[in-house]
Image (cartoon, rainbow, N blue to C red; front, side):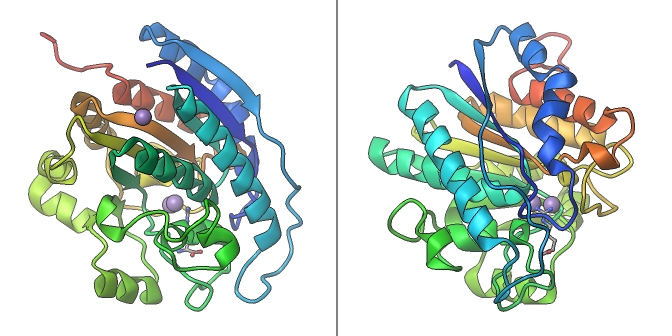
Length: 302
Ligand code: ARG
Ligand code: MN
Ligand code: MN
Ligand code: MN
């Protein structure tokens, strides 16, 4: 299927500024050319518009709520438009609050086409906070809660009825930084999490087999790739660095196994922060891994 790049140059949901430059960093590092090199039909839709980052303090437990709503509406509409045309949307963030708009559009598309939804949340963080338990008020720490219906109605009802999805439709992978309130909520609601401890115990191969279990031709697989998923030794250019992540080969195998499922229907690449990077190196690593997501193989006899 043809793919469409959608830039969302904002960091209104983040605690550090710089993710607004993510789309350009990915373009300059050669994302379009890399995908075309794999034989894909790529259209770059350019960047979406939205309000500036006011860089103000949280109000009622939320930082920049109005701005986050505005950006997510624009993302949701842009992603929905690509899905309607049978194209695969690739959202270039921007911070991870935008996963809400992207996945809300994907979930609605799945309901209309009677497809099963599976979301792979590749992230050091659970992003499962609410305004009551968030330690920061940053909305990039809340999109998963909003997607399952916990949050302000302006976000949980972005696509109409809440919730956009069920906890059982998500698998979190690479988790290693969870706030105390999030930890409780994960337990209480049974959010499926493959944390770094689990990856250490059974290995990334088995983790991915389990996370992809049940994914079939009737499944739309959405990959939400927060670049801070990766170990900071290979990907330092992110605003919320957490040590102890997957190494290059573990991440690459995860991506290869997603590609082999043949079911990926949409993708977010978020939280890349070129201001905190060196020589755009993190963008290059992210692109290498996205190539694996689209079928670049390390098999000698493919
Ligand atoms: N849990 C922290 C918070 O709520 C960090 C969230 C980081 N999220 C991210 N998408 N990088 O502020
Ligand atoms: Mn995240
Ligand atoms: Mn993260
Ligand atoms: Mn589809």
